[in-house]
Amino acid sequence: MGFTGIGEANIRHRLVAWGITLMIVGLVPLRIVLGPPHVLADWLTFYTAGKLAGTHALVDPRLFLAFQHAHGFRTDIFPYPPAFAYIYVPLSRLPVLLSFVVNAVVMLGCAFSAGAIGARLFALPKPLAILASLAWTPIGVSITIGQNAPLGVLLAILAIGGLAAQRPLATAIPLGLLLYKPTYALPLIGLLVIRRRWRELGIVAAMAAGWYLLSVVATGGDLAWPLHYAHSIASYYHADALFNAPHTVSLPGILLQLGAPLAIAVGSAIALLVLAIPGLARRPALEAGSAACMIGLAVSPHAYAYDAAMLLPMLLLLGSRLKEPLRTRAAFVVYILPAIPYVGTSLKLLAVIVLGLAAAWVWKRSLGLCLPAHAGEGA
Picture (cartoon, rainbow, N blue to C red):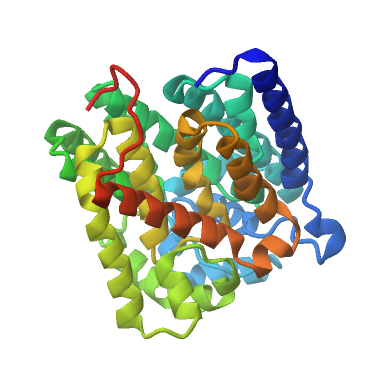
């Protein structure tokens, strides 16, 4: 939706000012000043993976943790397909802090690109869409702890764009690359199944086979690495869920934290997913792809604050469709409140936003109340 007139220009300038402020807050986190700094946080896990690429230690928790302990690193496993460790090999040759900075710059570039490409897909002014990406709190969190969510959201936006343009290769290749983190890729793969996009699914399956073969090499020739990988994830999941419970943004995560039985937490997630399927099948590809990322985030068994970067496509979609003054008011709630140090975390505002938007989208689709689609958008 374009911005015209003096009133719209003032609103745009206000949104840009907010965006720049939030980008600074996100990339120079106030938590470093207001609380104990965790500058390297998750980065040491990726740094270690780069060091151990090509060895069985990538899928052997004892060897992986022993290496970290010997080097004084924060102990954690590498919960990614082993082949993804090769991305970090060049960075693991650098001093730890320098490698962290290089990764942050690369992820910043991914966030910038996600906004720029999103501007074209969602018919938004490019500066505003780029700021919408850089100012989104989960993206800033991801960059400042050494995570890779901006890469995930960039690949997701590319795949959604390919699906909307009905270009199988442009859909499948970024989606196949997104398999570096299965929890990001599975919602869009599920969307392809729902919409019967068999050609794209065939390409993604071939790329999945490539991930397997490269991971055999990454684990020192371990053909059974998926079994060892699954065992590592199973042993890691419970402790990780307990440690990161305050940061969860998914429905099952929130319910489990509130003390609900596992059956209710899982059943609620399944129910939300089932209710979303008709809308995912019927809506235009651009909206369905954005919604798939959002629903996948809402029902994920493992979704923390930085993973909410995957909500960006839906935020861009809403930014292009909402009218004023609702758009500005929604931007204030969605962007500014969760960014306030401690307030956003203590009130679980990110989880409220993720689950609220997911529930609202499913409800509107169930009642047939639809957002207007862009003319000419592919199915």
